Length: 488
Picture (tube, helix red, strand yellow):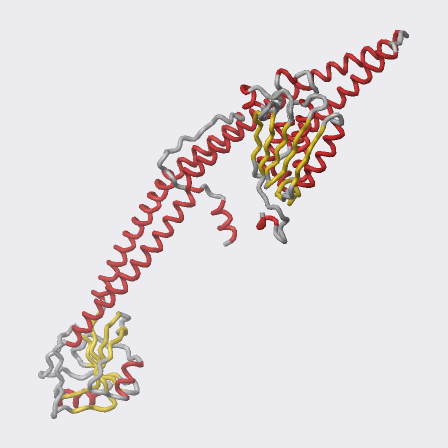
């Protein structure tokens, strides 16, 4: 049985559907056919019983006396008997002795029903049952107590005897056999038709799945993510939803691949400049050593300082690329409740070290949000680094945190209006800032981190000059008591 189940599971879906439909129809047709056959059988038996009830069988006193006297021998015919010769007529004693009339159609085998009626006669009770004659033919039998003279005052009851009246079931069985054959043929045709219809329905229903399979195989074979499965706009069944999901998946993969290729191209472009500068400086130092012509101490120190700066820029660029390449699953595992107040304080300490000549004022209120601690601190540090980078010497940077809204305002040259839509793009740098250190990934990391925390970040012109960065994060001014996900 297990082998058959495993074999069934390996069949194609359309074959399994066809077989299931055919099996369901076969079960339903079999149940209806069997029920119909038994109902017809009951109706036919009722007709035979009615026929036995209406049979013209009259027994006279002399005939019964002669029969019982000759029993168990066969009694002779009597002129008072008016019985059809296609009936079985006999008298049964409670001990099973049979007395058969000479004009009976045969001898019916005695059953327990017959003996019980003879042993305990009740004039008002008729017992109908099936039996067989001496030749093995089926017979429908009516067994009654043996009465002479009919019902009434002149009725004489013969105790310990019963009258058995039977009729052959040959015609009834022929009818039932014909009916069974017809039902079997109709059932077979119905099952075959259901199987064919199930196969046709399965093919029609699975045609979109076939298209989806072909599309998946095409993508696996050619890596062409531009494949789309046509879906009707008003269709909302499971196959249509699956097709839409596949189209959405391939579109997302195509977009991801495009972004990946763009990231690789931009990273290669950004890495080329510091690597070229590093190679040039190292070649100068190497050549001076090989030729025995040492560089002046001032030039040598300048070259080493340039190499160190380029190495720092490369390390920052690689770190930014690693941050952007991390998957959503890796980030989601590290998300927890974070004190934005502590995060901003830590970022401020680093910003003051990088801009000791600047004045950084801060007004920070408590706020708790759900985010990845390291990523959130990096995002705040990037915002403050931009403010430090573009602030004039001796300038002021204002930092405010209130109600989950963090604002960082500098008094630098500001960002041109036409450049504001691009400030969060990867590797984008303002033409006026390309001479300054940086990879162009800082604000892109800020935008991604804030969005993953469920917040928003914007850059805008500040009143009186400069730029103001605004970060809005969901959360609460107090930490959650137990469940952070529920409290925030």
